[in-house]
Image (cartoon, rainbow, N blue to C red; front, side, top):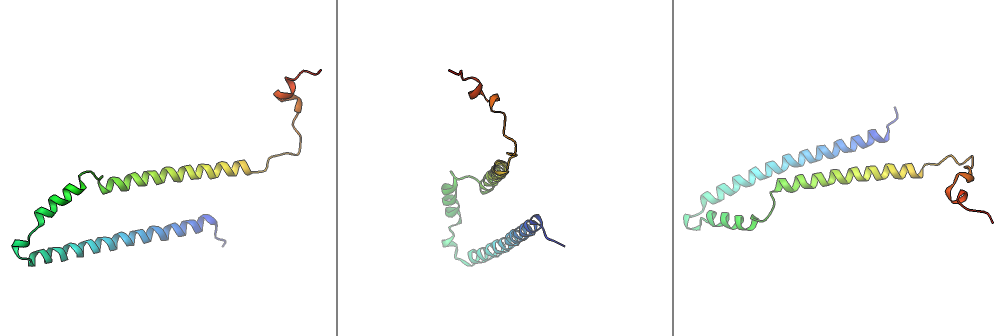
Length: 121
């Protein structure tokens, strides 16, 4: 059975999607482990070094003007969709333009505006 380009593209896409899914799972595990380690670390620190309120205020100050991370992901995803659509449309248009035209029979030159509008003489 012959494998088509579409089949190969689908298989590659499946592998990419699977890799992204595994990456998301690994990131979630890492974040969970990091949060647990941080909680254990903070729990073991003397109270005079508890800077959580100051750190929270500092983070709020830094992030006040930044967009929400999910907003960044959504905006970039929409941009990628628009670019992919434009790329597809361009590729299809270029294919149409580069397709051989039927040039076996010459067109009637007398029907052209530039020829019929000229006056002899």
